Length: 116
Length: 110
Image (cartoon, rainbow over all chains, first blue to last red; front, top):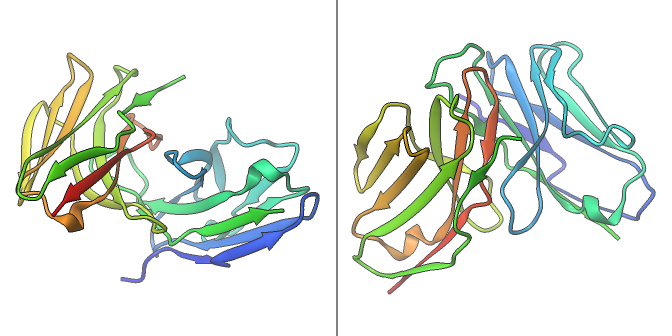
C-alpha cells in the first residue's frame, strides 16, 4: 500500500511570507495529524483531524497557522505570515480511526521549512 | 498538560552490547505506547508498540511496560552501528491522541 505523501519536501522562504504544505494520507485512514518537529526535539502535534473534522488543535498557533481537510482525505497546512521560529520539519501522519490500542501512526517524509 | 519524558542522550554503547532506553509519562489514562526510530533527516518509523504490562519481544527489541510506575523502556540486544538513531517514545490515550517525548539519541560504536 502507498504511504503518506507530502509535498514539497523542502521550502525556503523569507519571514513574513506565506507557505502551504500538502499531505495525502494512506487510503482508508480517517485520522490525519500534522506535527511540527524542531531540530533536536520530538514531534509536537499541531492539529488532528478525524475525517474532515478537527479533533484537537489546541497547540496550533491560530493567529498564523491554519489547516483544512475539506473532503476528509488530503489536507493542507498554511503559515501566514511565517516567523523565523517556524523553521522546522512539518510531518504529516495518518492512522485508522477508532480507539483500538493497536492503531499506529504512519508518517510521511516531511517538509523541511527554512525561514530566513 | 500530558508529558512524556526521555533522557536526551547521547547514549553510547559498544557494538554487541545491550542498549536500554527509558521513557516516563504523566497521564495515567494512557493506553498504548510506541517506540519510533528516527534517522537523521528522516521521518519516524515504528519499531514496536505495547499496551499490556510486562515485556514484549520482537527480534532484537524488547519493550517493557509498567503502568503502575508510568514507565516504558526499550531494550536493544546485540546493538549494531545501524541502530544509531534517535528513539522516540510516544504515548496514546483511549482516543487517538499521541504525545511524543523529546527522543534519546543512541550511538552504537563499532
